[in-house]
Image 1 (cartoon, rainbow, N blue to C red):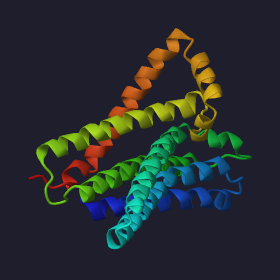
Image 2: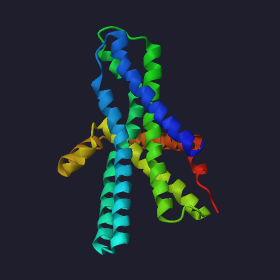
Image 3: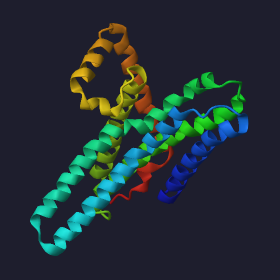
Length: 239
């Protein structure tokens, strides 16, 4: 899959998932399950943060280059660094959509909605989250290429891209686990004392750690399979 195809898949999946969620209450006369809309928006937020950070840092860097104001160069670096931290913290919200496959929203319905509708709708919803996660990684890798040399991607750079993707997807899997099993949100990190207290209480059960390891291994592996299935590693030209 090339870059345009990946972009089309990204747009199509997100649009289709959102439309099916919005149409569900209209077609079947049930309540709109608002948490899915909220999770959908959170899934797209890391991409917005990353693109916004890149654009802002580039604009400030260009102004610095034309005006020779050194402080602007450091400001661009600071903005980029802070943006990357925020992006990294928010990224698990994209992968979290995979957990919607449990179809628990059906419990809120006043009457039964055809299961085939929810299967297709929620499957596209979950896939949009996976694609959003991988698109974020691609944008980060393209940012690296632009910062180095887009025409000179060496084999070591290619390997570093794969390793970086594995590490990021590993942390996404951990974040998804925290969100699903401990009910953490990204902003819970603003309250570290409470965060670590809940974390300690959760892992006080020795059987939980085995499930945790299995969860992150399976999800990281699945994300990386999708990373390759979408042909992302082959989008980058090696020299």
